[in-house]
Image (cartoon, rainbow, N blue to C red):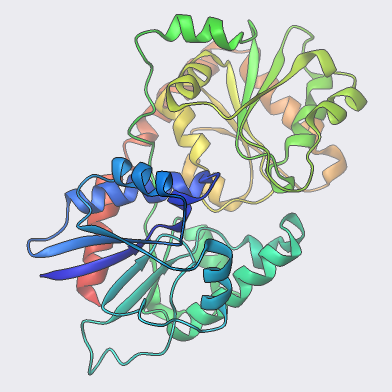
Length: 377
């Protein structure tokens, strides 16, 4: 029996984030679409027992789960420095750049291959939006991928182009995007959930981890230029960088109109997305932009920045706002949002176009492309 070892480190992280969602959805479809005679084996850093159980519940059908003796931090440092051990044997698919990358001879060992996923080029293009340690680690792993990876999966052509400027990957790059999560749909008790969330009557919604590159301060400042009956709801866990939602809102004079909802379940997120008049994705840099597709799936119009990956994912079905001249960005965001808020016909048209756009993205299709990539190698 042939095995594909899949690195699933984010699925045992305290906050799985977007990569965790990606790993779960793609991992599940890879198990479902595995070729005859191929088993999918999970590999994770040392973690609490309950995390292992949660992972196995989320990815039914794994042949087994291999557990490192090293925790995430130690394993990441070991792999960065080339201390790989036996983790790189056979076929390996990493759901991120966290991978056991080392020299190997595919000509004489055709069953040995390592594929990594680089979700964005931000450590190279916008390192100031990350922690210095995080940016340095990603760039170091990028150099190892440049030397040793047999293929590199990226979510958009925008990321492929950006990486092509900083890493010599040649023909090894393969664009394989994501899709809307399988659990993101309106529950039967949507009205009750909306009441429990205490959602505003009219509101703009933003979804994503609270960190500098997400453009949240500019979005909060944009609220000054919108009608006073329009509020802002922000969904997502706290990240690094001390993005002070309350402080920015207070300084902008819109404190009573900005609400941080924290992290929501998929069901509650669907309720919030469907209830919003418009979803704002003001990121300064992105690799994919899943919130755009999530909003589209519920026919909610989207206003997004002109970050290349967001423009690519939206495919013209959203309103695009230029990021240049940061001092004018909040007002331009407000102009884009106001176009939707003031024009119900435009909002409906964008909702329909967005829903059509989601049909081009499928986790099953992505999984089949991953299997084809490994077959090509």
